[in-house]
Amino acid sequence: MSKKYVYLFSEGNADMRELLGGKGANLAEMTHIGLPVPQGFTITTEACTQYYEDGRRINDEIMDEIMQYVGKMEEINGKKFGDLENPLLVSVRSGARASMPGMMDTILNLGLNDDVVEAMIKGNPDPKFERFVYDSYRRFIQMFSDVVMEVGKKYFEQLIDEMKEKKGVKYDVDLTAADLKELAAEFKAEYKEKIGQDFPSDPKVQLYEAIKAVFRSWDNPRANVYRRDNDIPYSWGTAVNVMPMVFGNLNDNSGTGVAFTRDPATGEKKLMGEFLVNAQGEDVVAGIRTPMPITQMAEKFPEAYEQFKNVCKTLEDHYRDMQDMEFTVENGKLYMLQTRNGKRTAKAALKIACDLVDEGMRTEQEAVLMIDPRNLDTLLHPQFDAAALKAAEPIAKALAASPGAAAGKIVFSAEDAKAWKKRGEKVVLVRLETSPEDIEGMKASQGILTVRGGMTSHAAVVARGMGTCCVSGCSAITMDEENKRFTLAGKEYHEGDTISIDGSTGYIYDGIIPTVDASIVGEFQRIMNWADKYRRLKVRTNADTPRDAKKARELGAEGIGLCRTEHMFFGEGRIEPFREMICSETVEERERALEKILPMQQADFEALYEALEGTPVCIRFLDPPLHEFVPTEDG
Image 1 (cartoon, one colour):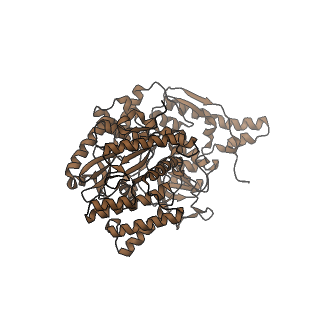
Image 2 (cartoon, one colour):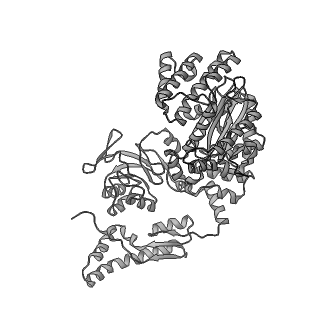
Image 3 (cartoon, one colour):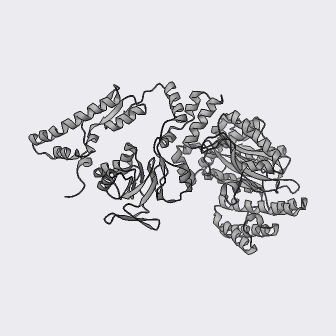
């Protein structure tokens, strides 16, 4: 038997993620548990891999199998592709194993052409229906041109804007059937001009090109960047889901929405989401019109809303996790288009994990495993006050080099940072780049902002080691260090002006945004206690100073795995004897310098042992990288 490349939704299940992708596996699973899913099929990730092996073409064997499944889909739905009596229209969507929101491409309303459009209108004389058909047609031409033929959205957006201006209306919804018919013709002309051939009218050709485009979108620049950032292997490929269209833009008794079973920002257990009447899926996400909160759906579509609430409960109970769902209401009837475990903030992740244990849905061990350890880092640093942050507009973005939030007065040198801190001021150190000389000033600052340097620059590495917020490589800054000023986003900043930086996102804000200190309490404490309860590994810390050792012990470290003695000499009054030792020419000179160093080391070690309350410490002998200790000034 040859390999199977296509599965009906009714043939798959949630365990087939690797083959059917996340979306396909979840559509199959929702079909199994009896939810209202329009019945289509999934083309496997293996077909995608084969497409790349065959030099970016879909081979005949796979294409034949796809067409066979188009036949099965037509039978199940009682409609036919390209048929003038009862045409079948489909959506073609990507679906990789790992969720990649917004990275890959989607085509809706596929299967329309001039003849099908005319036949549909003839079958339903309602003028509103005619408007709906032309609305769907112009959307399809636009998406197909953009996604499949890479013509670019902007040309079509311009044509829509010109049409709205000509008709004196503000929203797409206000355009009439005749306007949309005219737009469809303009869109096709635009397509011909850019591509050099007519818009394809054969639904099978449209489908073939659309599937190819989804496979190809696995390799688009934004997908590649997202994969690198989220450790998703290139070799996985994406599946393709072909599903009969349900129309949220059919009339005012239809609509579309996106919802979460819990609040993705706070983790609170309540239905969150947005809904648009008389719209298609991409309208909600694209933000063209302002959607209404999901609760208002109860007034608009009471029956569908009740059913939707039950679906949400079913899905949460089934997946035992917060779900992110897309749905459409067509003529008052609910259809589920996708579900997945929802993305959430670190704070929400902790609350949801704890709540699921309290609700009896998860064990403590499972709850711990639901948390991405990388997210917890952000919770251990000062954060901006959420409400104040929401109200603030960033003026620039650079590299998020070391997490945390910092707000304070601008200073331009390490000396100033120390002096201002002594006076009780909170400061942000802004430099072209930092050097080992700056270490004390960096310690005295709330945060560090550099014009040059990347994630592995001196500023970034040292700041991460100190747990200080740092944003690096902000090339948008025009720096004038001598006169203690810089220009950013059209404004000149001087010493003492205020600025806020977010080391978790890389955003820079004008003025002061209040910060709150991190604390391990509540859900965070519970999760960490469970982690302690079940772990087998003991954890030590890297710490070079008594202060760091004390903090590490507070946070539960069971000793020091590495104490780098040379790092003890960055403090006030210490680097000079160290330089003296490096530069001494005779043994006597070196011994004299070492006599100054010895009491410092002894005092540090004693304080380290005290801070660690009897747990082990590994000390590395002096191994000074000379460039870290030698001055940078020629003098």
